[in-house]
Image 1 (spheres, helix red, strand yellow):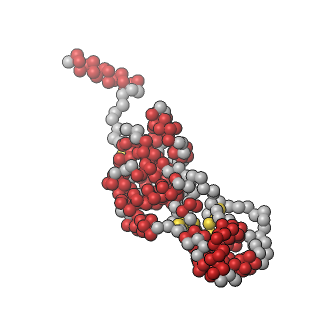
Image 2: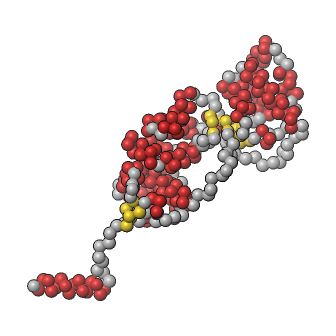
Image 3: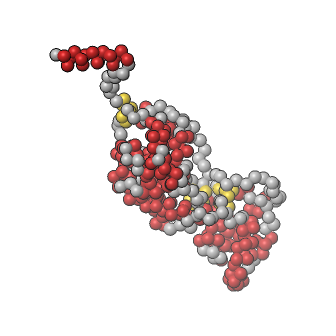
Length: 325
C-alpha cells in the first residue's frame, strides 16, 4: 500500500513539474505528404569528397542526423514505403553506411526539389550528338553507391522511384544527348534500361556511364554550338579538297593531321553540334568514326562549305562562348 501511495505521489510531482510525458503514437506520413524543406543542407553534404563525407557520418554524426531529421523527424513513419527507401533510411540513420547515406540524402534532396519544381518547358531541349570523350567529367560517387545495392534494392529503385533514377542518369547523360561513335551494345543497354527498367540492364548502363565519365578527367570542356553560332570562314580551302579525285584524296591521307587541323579551324574539336544531328553525324563520320574516309569526308566537306557560304559574313568574334546546353 505504501508503495502505491509513493508511486501516486511521484506521478503527481512529475505532472506538476512538467516531466511526466505520456507516450505519443508515431506520426505516419507518405513521401508526398512530407513538407518542403530547403535541400541545400543536403546538397552541401553531398558535395563533399569521400573523406569529408565519411567524417560527417562518423565524427560529426549528431549534426548530420539533425540535418536528416529536418526532412523526416525521428518519430515519423513513412508509409507506404518502398524496399529501397526502407533500406536506405535504416542503413543510414542506424548503421551510418556511407553508400546508403549518400543515396538517402540524394533521394531526399530530389524529393524536396520536386515539391518546388518549375513547370516543364513546352519546348524540349535540342538534340546533341557528341563523342563519348565529350561527356563532361564529374564525381561519380552516386553511381558507385547505386552499384553497391543488391539486385532487389536496385530493382525497387527502378520500379518505384524511376523519376529519381532517371534524374541521376540525366546528370551525366541527358536524354537529348546521343553519343557517337559508340558501340551497339552501349546503345542497346541504354535503351533497355530506359524502356524496360530492368535491374541487369540499368546496372550495366550505370557502369558504362561511370566508366565513360571517369575516363574524361583530362578532357577539355565541351563547347555546345548551334550551326548559327559558328563563325564564318572562307570555304575556298574546302572547295579545293572537294575537287580532289579519290586517288588524290588518298594521297592527302599521308598528311591527314594537316587536313584534320584545317577542318578543325572551321569547327573546333571540343565543339558539340546542337540541333542538327545529320550535320553532326557527317562531321563525326569523317573525323571520328571513319577518319579520312573519302565518301564520308566528301559528304562533310560539302555540308561544311555550304554552311560557310550561307553565312556570307563573319559572326561577332566577341560573342560569349557557352559550355552549357
